[in-house]
Structures are given as C-alpha cells and as structure tokens.
Image (cartoon, rainbow, N blue to C red; front, top):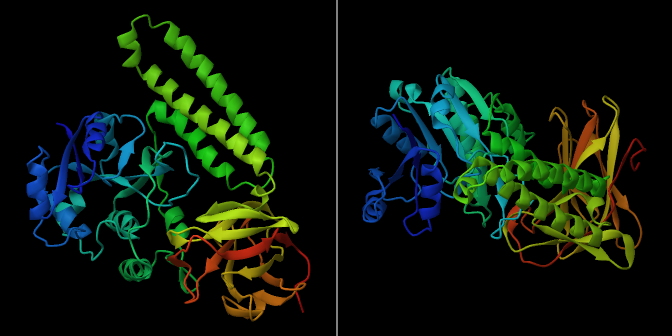
Length: 465
C-alpha cells in the first residue's frame, strides 16, 4: 500500500516539480480543491478530491473530511509550495504514524536556493493516523494558508489522545514569498485557536505570541532521513548565525571546517563508485551535492559578515535593513522593507543570571517611524515583558506592566527606552519592532524610513527614575 499524500495545488502555479519531488519518496499524491480548480487539475493529469466550495482557500475541516472519506488508515498533508530536502522512507513512516501525528518544519531559501535566515516557527507538513478523523468530524473555521491553522491541527490531534511527534530537524525547503494573509487574519486566528484550545499558550499578556505554541507542540523526535540529518543541522546553523551577537566569524569558520570534512568523506565514498550513472543515482552523490551548496552559502555568509561585521551585534534583522550611521559609529538605521509583515531585529542568546532583575536599554530616534516596540523574554518563554514607545513624544504608549518600563531623554533627538525583566533561564532574548502610525506591528512597509538605534545594552543597572 502506497502512502497517500494530500495537498491543495493552485492550478496556475508551477507545481510539476513539487509533485515529482513528492512522488520520488513513493507518495501517492492527491490534491483537494473546489470544483473549478479540480477540473483544471484533472485536465493535466493530477488526481483530485473535490470539496463543494466557491472559495479557493478551503476550510481545514473540509480538507480533513475529504481525507477521511478515502478510508485510508494513514495520510500526509503538505503545503503545496514545499518540497522534501531528501526522499523519505514511506514504509517506515507508516509505522511511525500509528496512533500519532508527526509535524515537519521547513528551511526558507530565496529564489537562488540560498538560506535566508528567516525563522518560520510553523509546520508545513503533517503525517498522521486518520482514526480521529474517522471517529468524529473536526470542526474548524480555519482555512488553508491562514495563520495559526498549522497549530490548530496538532492541538486537535493531541486533544484526541494521539501522540504528538516532530521530525528531529527540518525536512522541507520553501522559497520565500510575500505574506498572503492580513493583520486581521493573524489576530482573528489567535482568538479562534484560543477558543478551541483555552489551555494553549496563544497569548503573552494581551498579544498573540506564536513561539510559545511552537514550543508547546514540540513532541517526541522522529528520525529524519540520513542525508537530511547530515545537511539540515548545517543549514539550521547558517540560519542561527544571523541571530548570534558574538563569535560569529569563528562559528562560520568552524562550520566551514565541518562541511569540508564531511565533503572529504563523501568524495572518498564517491571514488569507490566507478559507474557514473550509479554515482548520480546514489545517496552519496545527493549528500555531496547538498554539502557543496552549504559550503557555498557559508562562503557567502563569511564575506557578508566581513563587510558588515559592526552590524551583527544588533541581532538578526527580519524585514529591515541595518544601515550604518556615519555620524554615530555605534548606531544603525533600521530601515523597513516593502513587505507586509513585522519589521524587527532580534537579539538571542544574551547571557543572564536566572532570577536576577535585568534592564534592556534602547536609545533611538525617529526616522520616518516614530514608534517602536521592545520585547524582553527569557529563553524558556516563562517571563515576558513588552512596551511600546513614542519617540516624538518621549512617552510610553502601552506596556505589560508600568513597573517594568521607563523612558527619558538621552541627548539631542535621541530617546532612552528601558524595559525590565527577571528571567528564569540563563539566556534572554530582546526584540525591537517598528510600529506604524496606526499602532500595528504587522503592516505594509514602504521600503524606506524606520528608526535610528544605538547598540542595545542589557544589564543590571538601575532604570531611569
């Protein structure tokens, strides 16, 4: 029996390579679409299940009911714009899915195939025992492509009594693109998820906080294919390097040495394969190819940090550019891009002493945007503080606690913004997010403007009185 893999293919997309990638693992691929799209896909040879709907973004509950109607004892679902890094062992996967739901993460790459450094904190494929779908129809207003639906599904399975599991490392690649959901959908989705599963850590204070749900849904590890286990940790390390504040060049050099050593081993193995056709069909060749890509990306990253080494201490930039200020050697301009998203910089791995009071100080001034949000939390997501500051007015707009926040003038146009926290772990995380004129942190960027910011300081110094 082949392993059934379901998806929702947009007929006008370039889907052929994705379907071939999935079939290479031995999956039987079926798309689930409304009647109009189903007709278009059948015309080009795609197997389709129809759902009676006029909407292109189908309800997740309708998709799951369609899967249940097939009577298959196990199934998979994958987002249509993701492919496997390497083929999966579908025979082994059948055994792993018994009484379980297995989640799979992705690594984001750009159109050239280079790792972007973005963190998706979500799931793009699921492999599951269909028994809960057969026993009771799932009820959900979530639609495919909306934020939070990929949390709703594993929560639904966990509450049905099945085991929650996750591949030990990302097994998917995804080419980044603009967000296709709105701010309203983000907030509505959080509210809907919380109404279904009140015990889920959807909110931090009054704001939706996806990372807490992502960690809550970690589950037991499932072994990834051997070739993915070789390459994915290196690709993940490339991502996390962008977020590190110290020793970045040394870590890049160490990863380059590790990659070179692995390549040497792989090439010795290849020399033993005399037949060229046999070589190109071998797993050894596929591993070597991916290691060569990783080596290329590391080389590019090393040169990038050589050019902008003064900027990495500000953290990982997400939808902003850190442009040096010649008048302020220890400051940068955080300039938003033109995407509809959050525009922020995040500093992770800040060493702290647990149960000691710390204050993060951000000195900033407006440059097109006059508000910023600071978030301060510990690594375990136990303690969290947040505040929004108005740089023009020099005041606090909102905060999780007025006892944790302070604001005051620094010099000339600069404003000193402070936020305090007592972390429960030995590492802290600080995020600085641009805020638009309506007070939103997810908005359509203009490709210019932002705020000027000096290097953040975290310490046990006294706050502004």
